[in-house]
Length: 441
Image (cartoon, rainbow, N blue to C red):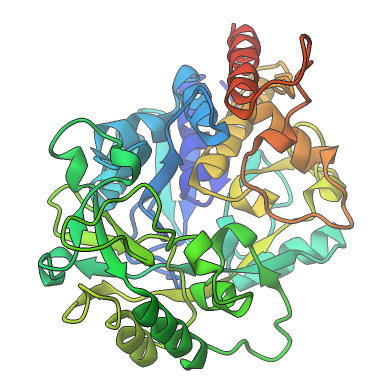
């Protein structure tokens, strides 16, 4: 009988790893500390809970690296992508989901699998024997993080991550805000309700920036010196980098037409957060403002002056490994090869990237337990680019969490002259799909 695979953590990576291993015939136990032991960011005890955005980002698999990663995960029978599609919400070109039904469906599918069981307990020490995948994510419990630090003889790295506020839709003033996807992406009437847009003129924008910079912020505790992940910067940090930074970022006024007045100086977008359309999250508005100050500043946004919040934003510390130093090409800890690591703790950033590394770790562990070894995907693929980055492609001295992007891929041979950006990205995805299909077979 095949030995049991134990997975610590039931987030995106742990859930996907469990599914892949079980589908390969390996018995799996998921060890999840929630709901008995909570975290700052989680609200439930469901597996694969989405704690930040409800978006898996772009679903364009022809010219976008994360969309290509979606394609690869679907091709590999990924559970996370299956459930995301089942609970998909209109979001223009993005893959956004109804977060609670999504997590419930992932939990139900895993618990219904005959080879998967879930043990609700906190694992406080790195296991000394057996077959394990460590997929505890960025919010690894303090005791386990300390055990990992002691066992590897290395300091874990850290950065700060932030979450965005969620607004009750019926408290948004639609005599000011309007419904429209940027560049009118989405063909159906429902898709055109994916986003609410709140316009600002120049004076409103300048007043908002002033209030944002002056607002009381959450202070770090003594000894916390980690930086921010650039893909999830708090809005006030962006504002500190220059008064126009937000207008070139989450508040850019391009691709939108205000039906009630002149072209806005800036626009705040809200994206539908659930299937009922009762909740909308403020896109790109991660923040570390204290709750009282936060509500006051956000209500300065035209259309949100009477808004009620289902959740205010916040900030939390994320922990990850210096993976190029600590992991081998099979995602195993070099010092403890019976333990693989997967997900955000390896230094990938984002729901999709975390689930993808769980998919690979689950398949690699299953192959080993079944008497074989799985070669990692080619570096020309999205999954291959990520695993190459975390297991040796990155400089260990400057290693930081990374989203999938075409900069991680081997360059395209520019025969016939330099390609335009769209053609170049299409060439990357065409090459990746062929290589990934060959790897799967």
